[in-house]
Length: 190
Image (cartoon, rainbow, N blue to C red; front, side, top):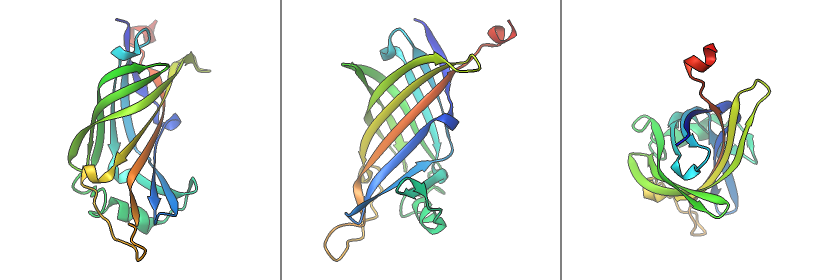
């Protein structure tokens, strides 16, 4: 098996989310601090694996894809009402298997969030591998999943006078990954 270790380039990658707000709009956001590695088998992606760790306190909410820098709202997301980052500082994902689904993949793994670990299946696309302008090997992936926040104990649910909740139950997660192949010390010295 031709497996190789790749580091996720977080400067060229993103983990974004969106959730309904007051039924009529969506709030978008992202995580600013995170890291991850991929063990990539370029010949058979189903023999690859992924591990990601996210600093929960790095959550940032955005409206219409721009950071509104509303400190109170971001603080609320970090509070015990939502992520409770003081008690649960890290969100993590570790793949268990990758299944081929036509020209796409299903990435099955354990997501640990808010003290709860559950198996999730992400729909993933592999864009390919190529060299960047500095000669480093890069690989590109994207993935999507919809989570029910209540499954992770995120149950803050004030009801509006029209009978709907303030924050939607379904959270869409969109991930864009660019990974850089690790170079062994022997290869780097050559």
